[in-house]
Each structure stands twice: as structure tokens, then as C-alpha cells.
Image (cartoon, rainbow, N blue to C red; front, side, top):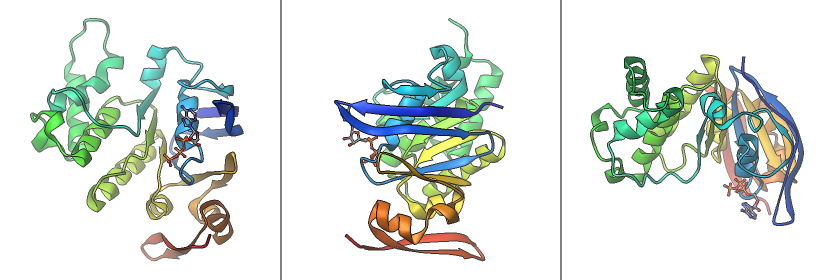
Length: 252
Ligand SMILES: Nc1ncnc2c1ncn2[C@@H]1O[C@H](COP(=O)(O)OP(=O)(O)OP(=O)(O)O)[C@@H](O)[C@H]1O
């Protein structure tokens, strides 16, 4: 099983410490939501874990060669405008590049992965359209499909559901959940506490220059922490239809 393991990971940018001494391990089967206020360091933590930012401490991914890393982790960054005027299916096929040798053409297996990713993100009808002509939310779904087609044991995504309509937010989060259930290790940053509470198996809450809480949603999303870290009150209940977390008021 491929885990994501961070040990005493610290990042300082322009002489400002963003976070210090983050140690954790995420295993296959876990769907982890990374939450925290704006600027708390979620993107920085994921980029340092990938090894694309200078850091102290260690990350199991940062140690890998670029080609091995591309077969180990699919990364979906926050900026997701597609600049290339190519078809949706060609963008998604880019996810298969780490699995192809130099000059090798995609096989039937590669095409099957692309078909599955397109179908999972409900993009079958758009596969021949120019990706640049899609709406922002549709482009986001194409890039999620590209990450799914990469078929790596670890998937990391920075606010993957931002800009999606409610139905596609839920179906996308469910897709990530299913990937975790199939044994993959999934880490996504989220601002929607309701989606995090409802779908993630584990939540990492960032604040105060580090991880302030790590555990199942009901143990992390406590009134004290939501007040201290986010400055809000929220309604949290385990209902017949699963956990519900609804932010209510700003308290500072
Ligand atoms: N290249 C950089 N140089 C200097 N400081 C940076 C740089 N990138 C990010 N920061 C700072 O690091 C801190 C963490 O930023 P980061 O983008 O990781 O936060 P975040 O939790 O992902 O925020 P958001 O929820 O707004 O996306 C912020 O204070 C930000 O200003």
C-alpha cells in the first residue's frame, strides 16, 4: 500500500513561517479533507508534500523521482483554466502520459481509463468539444477527469469542488470517496464544512501554523475549534441521513 507520510514538514516563505513540524500519514482507503481559513497553509502544505516547494523535514512523495512521482500521485491545483485549444478527451488523455514510454501511443487500456474518467465526471457528451470553450465548472470537471485517468494510488486536489454547481459538487466528492473506498489515498482541501463532514473519513484542520486537529469529522468539527480557528458557530448533528454541519454566525 502507498501511504503519504510527512515527517516534521515545515515551510517558510519569504522569511515568514507558514507552518512548522507537520507529521502525519495518510493510508489507502482514507478520504481526508484538509480544512482551514484562507491563508492557513493548505495549498502550501500540499505543494510541499509534492516536493515542489522548498521545505524542511521530509515527505514520502518529495523523495521520488519525477517520473515515479507522476505514477504515484495525481495533483489537481487550484488554478484550473485550460489554455490549450484541444478536445476534452485529449486533455484527459494527458493524465495517461506518466504511463507511456517515450514515443509510445496510447493503448486500449489507456483509452479505457480515459473513457472511465470521462464517464465518472459526466463528460461523455463533451468529449469532442474544445476544452477552452467550456464553462469554468466544466473545465474543472475535465481536469478532475484528467487526474482520475492518471490512475495513481494517491490523489491530491486543491479545492476541487470550488466553482461547481451543487449536484456536481456532491457527485465529484462522491467520486473521490469511491476512489478512497477502492483503496486509494485521497487528500483534498475544502472550504465547504458540510461536504467535509458528510463525505470525508478524516479531517485535518489547519490553523496557528500547523495542524490543530486530525480525526473523524465529529471529533474535529467541535464548537470550540470552529470558534477558535474559523471564528464561527456552526450546527453539527449526526442525522439519519449522515452528518450535517452548517456554519451559522461569525463571532469575531
Ligand atoms: N509564494 C509565496 N511567497 C510568500 N508567501 C506566500 C507564497 N505563497 C503563499 N504564501 C503565503 O503563505 C500563507 C499560506 O498560503 P496558502 O495559499 O497555502 O493558504 P491556503 O490555506 O491554501 O489559503 P486559501 O484558503 O485562501 O486558498 C499565506 O499567508 C500566503 O500569503
